[in-house]
Amino acid sequence: MRVTPAGRHVLILGGTTEARQLAAELVGGASGPGPTGAGLRVTSSLAGRVAEPRLPAGEVRIGGFGGPAGLAAWLREHRVDALVDATHPFAAGISRNAVEAAASAGVPLLALRRPGWEPGEGDDWHPVGSLAEAADVLPALGRRVFLTTGRQGLGCFAHLDGLHFLARSVDAPAPPLPADLAVLLDRGPFTLEGERAVLRRHRIDVLVTKDSGGAATAPKLTAARELRLPVVVVRRPDAPAGVATAPDVASAVAWLDRAYR
Ligand code: NAP
Image 1 (tube, rainbow, N blue to C red):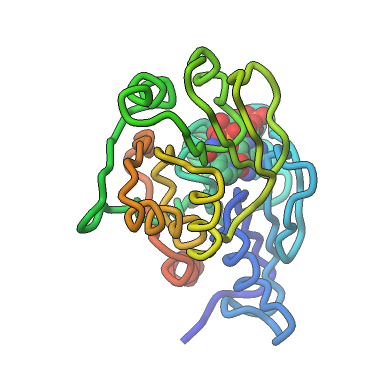
Image 2 (cartoon, rainbow, N blue to C red; image 1 turned 180 degrees about the vertical axis):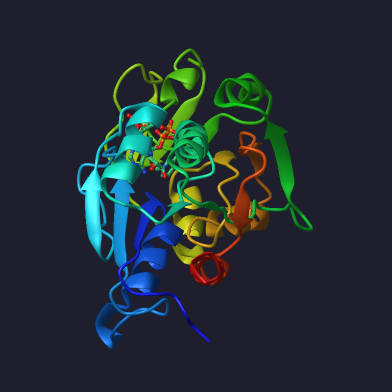
């Protein structure tokens, strides 16, 4: 039974597929009021990194809050009843801020974190702790690199003169950049067929990815396995300790129901 009272306000820290799915679920879309009850106010917050973001259902605000104190002030001013940190697993700064702000404003916090990827039979994965470490191991693994780590941080690869890079990002990257760089402007979800075609067309011999998890960008891993390519996998930063965590949207909705009961 869904018992969430109407008139409550949920703030979703977004920028991910799951954040958009959660907003759509809570708002209810075209089919009527969402599962947590009619009248629920849903605001999504985006950092403003992408020029033309896909906008979630419900209300949307864009831009930083000004650190944890700014976020806490926003929670109070807008009478937020629950905060869901549904940001990307590599967005460690905003997740830390969410913990501090929620505690200071006395607002329950849930982290919606999709599980990381696991290597399967036939995978040749090389786990590293950072983009800089990924750059260190690349010369021993290949010559034509597919970088799928986003446009931020490409400077970590700028000194690798002997390698050709294909970088995929939503918006064009800014310098510093590798000298031999082709850019593919695109955004997920991606298909296995499409990923196979990219790897073949650009004669890629090594892939670099963050351990983002989720289905939307996973087909590149299958395509790399099929072609027996090495994959450099950047491990996730540690998530803040002691925070309630949901692995998927359905669990997040269930947590919100319980929090309001
Ligand atoms: P970050 O390093 O953790 O955050 C840096 C600052 O950006 C935060 O302190 C905050 O500024 C602002 N910010 C971040 N996310 C915000 C949000 N959802 N709403 C309002 N302000 C936000 O973040 P990042 O790694 O640059 O990621 C930025 C956004 O892109 C996140 O929303 C994330 O979900 C999305 N994203 C990130 C990645 C990735 O690989 N990092 C991949 C895909 C999507 P103030 O301190 O001023 O509040």
